[in-house]
Length: 421
Image 1 (tube, rainbow, N blue to C red):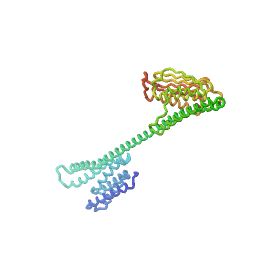
Image 2: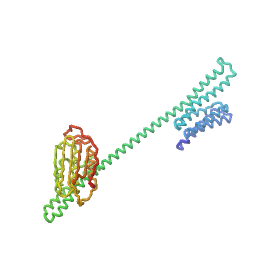
Image 3: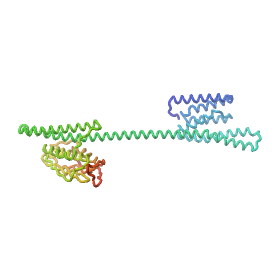
Image 4: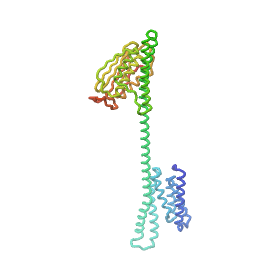
């Protein structure tokens, strides 16, 4: 029944109502010679005081004292104007039921008040001779009263309705702004999370491969130290070079994380030769077949190809059968790039399971370019097969090459994967 309002607002309404009620009493002092008229002013002042706190209750009080005024035969005074303010609040702040009651009251109250005043006018004209008769004259007066009172009550009600609509529109705009701000915040959070995933993926590729090379060379140097110091010295040099390169890549990656202008390491297709050489140095028999020309591939595609080959060879060294050859096939077509890496599986249990981040990272790279990836056992072998568009799904154009056909975007398929890859 009562709307939530600040105490200052309630006090302001009460003070304004009391002041206006006192002014009405002063202005109509001659007509307030009856306690009934004073009671009517007090009642209308009370309705005015609580018009915003409880529009429905204020409307009810106004009706009670308006009927009381007519039943006791009082002449209307200025306090009846307070009903206009009550009508405004019924539509501006009231519920749907109160708002409807205000509209009905504006129309019905106008009819009742006009009928009451018209009846008083008719009673006064009964002893006066007129050309058209008292009935017709009083009817004209009644119609005029109805029009005037209807304007007095209906216009404030319509004004309150306009105020309500504008307030609702303002709240809708605020809600829209809040929704847009939340959406922007969510987009920023997604972008941050994607960047974190990208950096984690690059960190895994860099560190896992480099540490695998360092561990293999360190083991070889330890065994070769007494038999052939030259071989041990060469292995230590490889360890130093690999560690320094990995440290530089990590520093660049951290620079990209700390500063927007930072550049993450971006290996290219030509770096695959160096990668294969490093893996051969640690004892992995890598056999590479190439078909097509990679010239003009976008930077993002070259990076994806390099990282997928790097992770596949690292996994083959970690989890494959020692001494078995690893076959890698790279096929470059005008619209697609295909990568296949096959190695013999180690079934003796000597190779432990990995963290599983490698295959996840490769699949993410393939998916981000709009390609597909399958990885899993193939007989006694383990095969990784990737097919991606030459132009990634992000729309990056190749350097010096425009594909003859638009790239085909597919979703990553889910196949059986080897545990720990």
